[in-house]
Image (cartoon, rainbow, N blue to C red):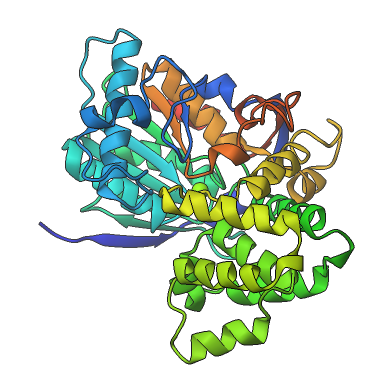
Length: 405
Ligand SMILES: [Mg+2]
């Protein structure tokens, strides 16, 4: 088989298309409660989750799988099949569409699902770069379509139909949330990052009070967020936030940690946790709240919980909701994209169109559940992210889709 990968530079006409505000909506308007976050417990309680049904998913470990793991794809296929059963659809699933924003994360999850299911499949990876020419890269062997414009979703759909896909009751559609359906990559994703950082700041301020040194935190976070420290942070924002808290609280200094790394005596996060544990023993005045967080993080890491810093994630939930639907309806589109986490209109219109054709739609996200749903004690009155209204912003692709059938 050829390993054709074609890159086309298309007319820049579409690049000029002006984004519009298409009014308010919620993620649930398109996906209902068929939304599954990091713990792999579907929000629609009728769908069995990892806790109740992992044995039916044939997983190789009892840990919560991450997006890149084969077990994650097994769970995703299981959810799709259960969803099909739940809607009493007699036709068996035999096609997969996947929409995401990261070639590594989403692309790998897609590749695993495609291989395990044997379904005819295709994946769209979007990352907008309006300063560049409109580029599409098609990997024909794996049916992966990468584009630097979100309106190219319509071109991708045309391409999948040309490949013989039917896009009907037999088709499972899996859509990523962060930076795909919400906060489109390259267009609006910086607001998601801001919400996360603000969540961290508030957590630090509540733990450290007046001692919180925001400038030092920003400096240390920016350094340790680099990929060269992944051996320590495991590319996990919970780990990183905890490390920065310990540094800011003065239990360990930034120079000390760099020295330990340089001398090769610090090579993973659990080792760092033990180091902090011993510092807390010899430093009883470190403060009760930092000690409590240390113990909670320690406990979660031991049980294999990928989201050990709960307090930070609950703050991130609040700062995320604060940025949804927060601007008035007549706010200029540039302001919406700069200050609000918006729904990606092209993905919404595609979801609507696929729904009408009878496809099964699911949202699958690596976002921690704690950062996506309210906490019954701390934020009981806030809606979960998928039911929070916000503006739909982007280009209109519905007329193009309707022409396809
Ligand atoms: Mg994403």
